Length: 393
Ligand SMILES: [Zn+2]
Image (cartoon, rainbow, N blue to C red; front, side, top):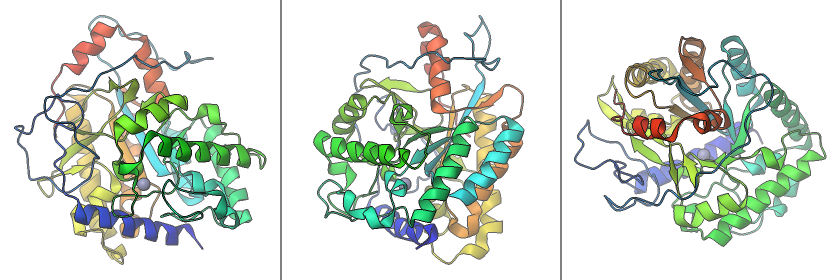
């Protein structure tokens, strides 16, 4: 069973979610945006439970990471008066387990100096024959929406390419395990803190187990994650994340590109909802959401890659221009390692990385690097950055 087949299952699951759930994403969570902000018509997505408009969630204490050790890049410093922040771009890849994708991303990263983050799906760390080691909260033992890690040979090669990515300075977070989105109940949006604790305990047990096979990614390196389909009840999830040593989440949605905030004790890096210039429609800037907008995430549309890639690439370029010339908020680009629509979305993100990460005043960094940069800044400076209008393309 190949990864391609498993992504097929994932596609079906997510399509179901998007087909049955229509949620307006503006104002989600932050209480800073309101639905009165107008824009082109919005496509469907599911950012998880919405916080009622105007009801801000408590920030809680700001979590910290140890200061970076060793030689640091020149941009890792406290802003001087009047100095603009670097334009951070956070590339992140959910699942994280594809040698073919890493073999394309790592050379681009090496050439441009980019660092990226992969959100590992824990089940790709155990072979299919050990599927009984997983019990998703409320689900039968050995079931998953994205399959398991394949053969022992698959695991062996995975250890090798993940170690290579780690050695190249890439970061790893979690995309959790079973990928149970709305429609496959009990889905992650209904899980209690106890359920999330079970999910994360199992994730870390796989990470410890594969350690015996030579993987150099250790549990203490995992500092954050992205939930399946961006779903979850944050009041239930965040306590579990914090008790597992996490300092950030990147599952929320913002209208336009906004600065990270501290939400209930975690750094929150929201995915922006942006405009797709070619279609004059809005989309949450994630690969699947583009695909759903373009043709309803249709299987068998591989021939349309030459049509889709420029539309997505043009969107990235336009968002980058707006944010670079605007509030300079970190730009979160969230993709999966996938071959949807003939690789249209992987092609767009790889091309954008290659042409952008070595531009002046632009830094393609991991989540932990950006958090370490944020920690160096005067809190009043961060407050003023957060007070700038969201960047809209
Ligand atoms: Zn996913």
